[in-house]
Image (cartoon, rainbow over all chains, first blue to last red; front, side, top):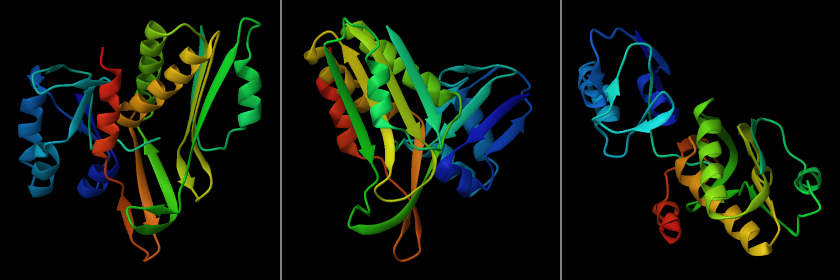
Length: 82
Length: 152
């Protein structure tokens, strides 16, 4: 089981901020995006947006990075603090 | 070097933060930056704002930025405070304070930390506009461009 988090605009678009997700085996960020994108048009729009940022265990990750059981994976839009 | 990172709903007191940065008598320079909420953005009147963040990662990413600053400049003390939750125009949003032996390090590190905070720390602003609509603020290309001058 991993925890997938969505923030800000994405959280609102998907209507959810936290998704427990069963992981069958270790996969890449790219694989997870493809799996979640199957959930619908909004999901695909969020996960396939060019500027979507992914963090694994609170560290910025790239599409090739691996996700293992117990990880926390977040997807969020470009940041606007400060 | 000592540092403090705080994410909080409440306001901060710049005077108290200044005193806290004067941690040692070796200190010869204090630079402080305060980001304040405007009532105007991208041509629209803004009535209020809501700031969201990613608890845990926010603090980690700011600590990593401070760590990078300490590798470049000799610093005595750093404090970063960022507010979240509801905010009104004129209210403080963010504080970056740096103390050092000399002014160049204090000025430069303060600006460096602020520049990287703006493009890396996971905060998001949602504005309530005068016409009643809510709007997630878009990231600015100019904030990304601001990082170029720190390239080594």
